[in-house]
Image (tube, rainbow over the protein chains, first blue to last red):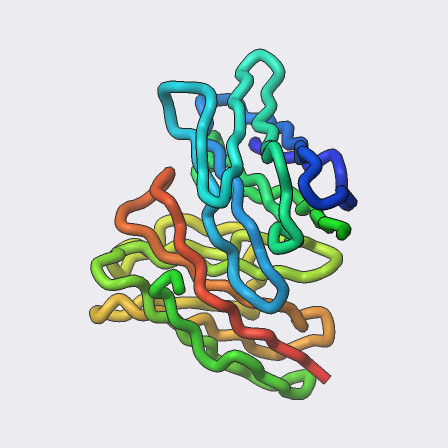
Length: 112
Length: 113
C-alpha cells in the first residue's frame, strides 16, 4: 500500500517570508513524487516532480523540494512567497499501488 | 491551460438520475485518468484507461463506469446518483502510463439535489 501525509492543513505566512509545506509518504517500493497546486475553481497544475537523480528538485514559480529517502519525506519550499502563491498544494506519490495517491492538501495563505 | 478539456463545467441533477461527464485528453496522450474531489474524501483516484483499455481501478463505485473511445476521449458515467456523489470530477491525461506526469483538466462540478 502507499499513502501520503501532509502534516499541515493550513499554513498562513506573510508576504516575502519563506515557507515549507511538509509531505511524508509510505510505499513498499521505489516511488515517484509530485507536488501540484490548485488555485480556486481551477484544476491541478504540476509544480515539480522527483523521478530519480538529484534529490533537490526545482519547479515552477520559484518552488523547490527535497527528496529524503531515509525520512520518507518530500517537503516543498520557497524562499520568499508572494500573494499570488495563495492556493492549495497537494503532494502525491506513485509507488506500490501503481496509481497516483494524493495527500489531503495544504492551504497556503499569504498575508500582506 | 493544460490542454485537457472537460464538459460540462457544471452539472446540477437530482438523486436517482444518471449523468455523463466527458474528457478530451491532450493531443497525443494515450492515458486518461478520472478523479473525484470532495471535502470529506479529498482527491480520490477512480479509474485509468490507456489507449482504450482499462488499466487500473481505484475507489470507483459500482454505480460508476467509464470508457475510452477510439479517438481517445473518455466518458465517466454516474448512475443512481446520491447526495454524496456531489463533488468535483477531474480528468487527467498523460503520454504513457504509470509515473508519467498527469495533466489535469479544469473539472466538472456535479451537484446532486
